[in-house]
Image 1 (cartoon, rainbow, N blue to C red):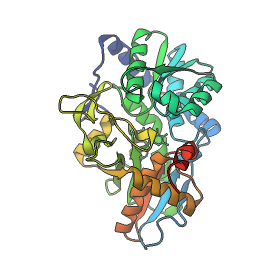
Image 2 (cartoon, rainbow, N blue to C red):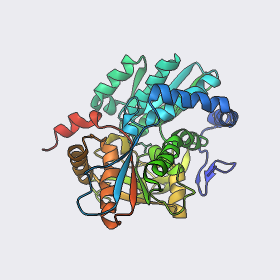
Image 3 (cartoon, rainbow, N blue to C red):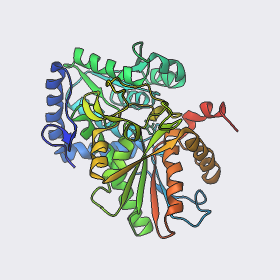
Image 4 (cartoon, rainbow, N blue to C red):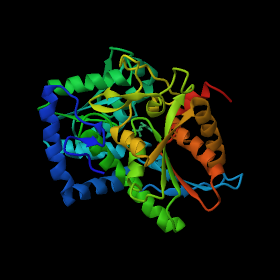
Length: 392
Ligand SMILES: *Cc1c(COP(=O)(O)O)cnc(C)c1O
C-alpha cells in the first residue's frame, strides 16, 4: 500500500523531525514522486541490478534441510548471492540514483554492523560520490573488518561516541549531520525506518525481491507459496519480499524477530513482540522502551537485527493481521546456522538463520503440499569469526 498524504501506514509512520528536516523530506518526497513515475529511472535501476548486483537472484528448493519429517517443502530466495552478499545493495543502488538525480555532492549513512555502510560505500565508489558513514564507536571496534572494507572502497568512517556507542546513536548522529548540511547532502537510510518518505522509498527498492520471487515460484513450482518467511531487524528484506505477495491474501506472511536470550530476559531485540508503540528516528511504530519512554538497550546474536525499532509498515501489517510476527532466540538461530550449512552447503547470515529456524518449525506443522518461501537475506561469511568462538 501507499502511505497516506501525511506519510502514515494506518496509525504508523509520519514525520517526527526537527523543522530543518521537514523541508528536506518534502523536497525528497517530490523528487521521489517524479523519479518513480519515470520509466527511464526504473530502467537504469534494473540495469544496474542486473549487471552490477547480479539479479535476478535464484529461488532454490532445499534438498535436505527440513525434509526429514514429511512436512512442507522449503524454498529459499537467494539474496545471499547478490554483490556484497545481502539484500542491502538493492536499496543503496536506488538511493544513490536519487542522490545523483538531485545533484547532491555527498552521501551520508548510518551503520550498525557495517553491512549497510559497505553497501553504501560500494555505490558511492560506483557513482563517484563521496560517502561518509556514521558508526557507533563500540561497533567500530567490534566490526574492524567492515570498517576496513568501507575505507578500501573510499568511504570515511566517523566513530560516534554518544549513548551506548551503537546503531541507535549512529542513526541519531546521521540525522544531526544531515540537518547541518541538507543542501548538498543525501542521507541513505538502510532499512524501512525513519521519517516519511524513507520507509516507502526503501520498500519500493526492496520490492524487487518479492516481485521476482512470486514469478519464480509460479514458473518453477506452478503455484504460489503457502507461506513467506523473513527476518525483521528494521524490516527491509521482509517488506521487500512481502510486497510481492501482499495482495495474494491466501499467502501467509511471517516476520521473524530476534528474541535474543528470550522475550522476558531484558536481552532482546524483538520490537513488535516485546515492545510498545512509540516514536523512534522520526516515525511512530513499535519500540523497545521503558515505561517512561526511554529507548532500551537491545541484544541479538546477529548485529543486523540488533535494533530497538521496526519499520512502521510492519506495525500496520501487524495491526491489520495481514502479517504475523514471531520471535526466534539466539540459540535457535545458531542451531539453524550450523544445520543449514551442513544440510545445504549454504552458510546463511545469522540474521537469515532466524528466518530459517522458524521456517523449519512451520514446515512441520504444514502438509507436504504446502510450500514455504524463505528470504535468505544474506550470506554468513561475515559471521564466521564470531560463531567460531562460540561452540562446536
Ligand atoms: C541488515 C541485515 C538484515 C536486517 O535488516 P532488515 O532491514 O530487517 O532487512 C537482515 N539480514 C541481513 C543479511 C542483513 O545484512
